[in-house]
Each structure stands twice: as structure tokens, then as C-alpha cells.
Image 1 (cartoon, rainbow, N blue to C red):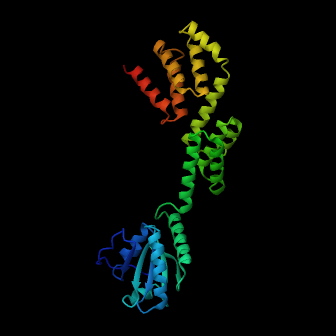
Image 2 (image 1 turned 135 degrees about the horizontal axis):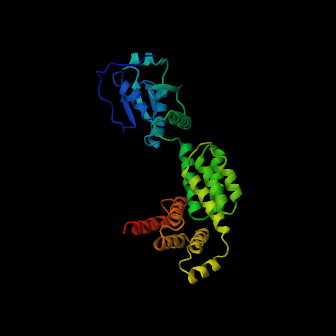
Length: 313
């Protein structure tokens, strides 16, 4: 089917118009080119057609409700007989769905509004798969669920976060963000082995900042657990402020306790007293903590300011 037209044609309708009247001369701009950015319904009709008059309100109501996700182009067959012939229209109303410059589906006759809405929804899904018109409704729902899961993690509601991310995985098994969310919830409730097993399910070679940060955080927590009693370390630091190993170990324990700023302060103190201690070990550990906490964590932001002030004073 050849729908290519000459370049000497009228300008297309405004892209924001939901419903436009088109013609043979404008078909390329109004339909073929417009369907490159969003799906387009083309309604072939005539003023004398009774079923057309029944279908028109349903079409226009559905298109209006979709708020620009789908465009409607109306073509009067009496005035555009050649175009109707090219499209193979033998009876009206005839509706075609266009995505990415070609007809992908269609129907004939006056369908009820619910069926029209279903057809339009199917067209949106087809467009999304073709990379036209933005994410599908299912993808929007998954994105919203991921945001809710992240919010639950930040609120320390780990059980709810786990449930949300697990639900996403049932519907989108390939979601790396959901997989990392499940692992994070497991780690935060003490199930580090489960978290590692979950992270092991990531596709081989798949890089994910959240997964890397979680793995580092778990390693730091386990490192802190091997360091002994915090009270004894505090006594050693109080008795000898130059006991950098005790202060370093105390920083790791403070991080495991969740007092990130205290950990930063201990490591900064070591750097102030002896920058070369353990081959600049305090600074290296501080940078490792920043990566594990994430760039938006308040302790990271303040710690980086303190580090910059120390290095560049």
C-alpha cells in the first residue's frame, strides 16, 4: 500500500490538537508523520452514515479522556475517495490505528465506548513497544511501585518495602531495581545471606550503583562486628587520643550503629593528626563509606565538606 505523497502539501495540524479533520493532501503530515510521536486513530466517515454518527461521540470521548496519548484524525470519504481506496475502505465507519508511520490494527462498524477504549489502550501498548508515545500504563505502574518501595526503605518500613519490590518482580522479573530493593530490605532486617543470594540473581555483568553500595555496606557492617567492644575502644581513645587504630575501629562500629556522622568525625580526626597513618587509610575508608551511603546521604554531604576543608585549607 503506497501512501507516500508529494512534498508540496499543506502544513500539518498543531501537534497539540487531539482531534483534527484531514484530507488526502494532509494525510502524510497528520497521520504518517504524527504517528512517529504518538499513536493515531484514523476515522473514515461520511455525513450521511448513521453508524458513523453513533461512533463519533464514543471516539471523541475516549480520545479526550486520554489527554493526548492518542490523536484522532477524521477523514470524510466523500471528499477523499482515492485515499479511502488506498486504505481498502469498503464500508464505514472504518477506523485504523497508526504507529510509527504504518497501520497496525483497525476495526469496522460502530463499537461501544468500552470497546473503543480497549482498542485505544491496545494501540498505546503497541506504540510503547515500538518506542512511540512514552511508557505504557503497565510501565507507569511499575515505576510508581518502585518509587513507593524506595520510600518505604527510606522510612525504614522494611517489611512493606520487601512486599512492594517482591510484587514488582512477579510482574517484571527483569527489574534490576526491584531485585536490589528486595536485597536491601533483606539486609536491613539482618538477613545478609539472603541479600547476597538475591544480589547473585543480577544478570552477569550488570552494573547497578545500589547493588554495589549495598554489598559494600554489608561488608562494612561485618567488618565492624569483628572489632570488639565499643566501650573499650572509647576508653582507649580517651586515654590516648593518638591511638589511631582504636579510633578507626570505633569509626567502623559507629557506622554499623547508624551514627554515620560520628564515623566521619573519627576518621577526619585521624587525618588531622596523622595523614600518613596506614598509608592514608582514614581517607580511603572515608571515601568507601561515602560510596556505601550514597551521594544524597546527609552524612556524605557533610563529610565531603569536612574532607574538602581539611585537604584544601
